[in-house]
Amino acid sequence: MKPNTESSKIREILEGCKKNDRKYQELLYKQYFGFAMSHCLRYSNSREEALEILNDSFLKVFNKINTYDFERPFGVWLKRIVVNTAIDTYRSQNKHYFHYEIDNAIGLSSRDISPADNLAFEDLLKLVHRLPKNYLTNFNLYVIDGFTHEEISKMLGISVGTSKSNVSRAREMLRGMLESSDKLNVERK
Image: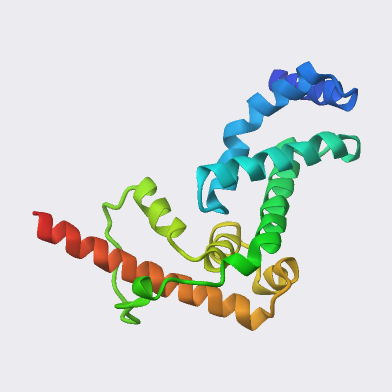
């Protein structure tokens, strides 16, 4: 069986990184920038914060590259490092994210509404990023990355009940935001 050329290319880059060769580190960074950044953006409130998480993640990759098992896909290993780095960042800044502006909370509804079918991915991502940081992190871990509430509680150092509550409140807030955006779209027409 002929080896996959992309796999052998990545393996060569990873071997160069194991030797602390800056050229190969730069190649790895460029190769996986988009992949890693897409995960970082889900866990951050701004592009600057996402870039900080990304750079911290790659620093960990370069420092721990000797522990990487070549039998496993590199992308999976990198994603785990990125998610864990985002969680570490969340924990370190956690005290700043429990505050939610009261003006934004007015008018939140517990009614079930159907989300707009024509909402673009970027628009939905913008709405998700308007969530308070603790809700955003919980929502991403549970809904998007598929972690259980038990796993999330261990990662974030919160109770299982708090994790469930954060996801529930995030969904409720998103419903309210979707309802508001639907009303704006109807008024504009």
